[in-house]
Image (tube, rainbow, N blue to C red; front, side):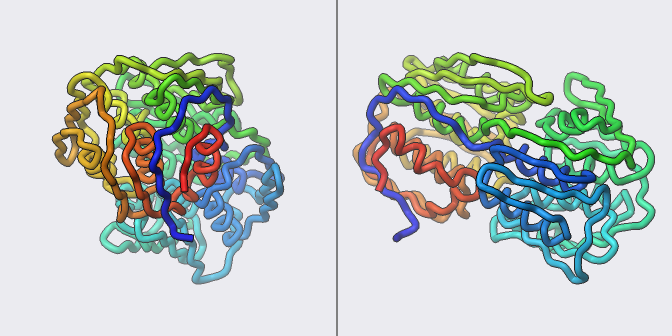
Length: 441
């Protein structure tokens, strides 16, 4: 079977209810923290994507016992800094920046040298952003000009640090936080606003953490050395994965969709705020709190009269994984949309800002792109008849899935390569989208 899909028909109207797999960020964080707990932790609805499976494999190679069952995953932690592994170990993070960067935080105490590598895409991404602060704890690093592979040799006498995180990167912040729980003394982090899943998990686990929230920065203080009790976790559905179905429904005719038990963490719902400003019709219902995380159901409807947006920079971090989809909504808005300060998009699995521009150009939407901004000239009447091919995008799962949504809503005949890229974050994407009536060959 060729590793591509073909779409020649727009999706017909639908009225459905679906569940989406567990949140990737929470799945990886649960596994890493469970490996540091003293005893057996169990997760339910763990995402079974390549990024998460690579996380489990790396932890196994570090000596952690893991039992992946039909509906659960059990991790038998040995406690803080109790990894037990052979010399000259090489860990492969695959495509996952979250795994690669956070795992280094847990290895600042490694007794022997550990090598971390990744796939072609991950090996193009910046790791100085975590090795620079982590070396202040006392660990020693050797990198390939800031890229993978990275060699780390830990320290027996780590030192608590003061760290300023200026990018709004939850990965950088979380890597330092994981190093801090293993380090005696008080680590202080001044972090630009970003996703706060790690902080919420720390609080739920009763770790010594205090957070002072300011308008642009959070001051996070962590006292290291407290043991972690094992914990069970029913992982809520991933909003980033759900976003593909939200936009599909909004851009389709006469359609309705309910997605249940979605993670509605305030640091993640930037896309919902942006879509609301663009006149996408949806409601949030059955809202509740689960172990510190806000969750609920979303009801979304076909949306006409989409409005252009001058997107507030303050929403960028909370929507960073969904901008390719937001660009598609802007393509059908009645007017010009402008997005700026998005250079972080080009630090993802592919240079996503440029890929967003490329997809728009292929569907005939005028746009002007720089290395950090894009202006999109929307066309509410867009309806394609031509042939479009999407390939050579570094197997970026979000480029593949966003292209699929464009094909199903804008028309035309599409050939989209690297179907297996979805295994990174959403292996059942094609299956679920066919459940809504999409015809994909």
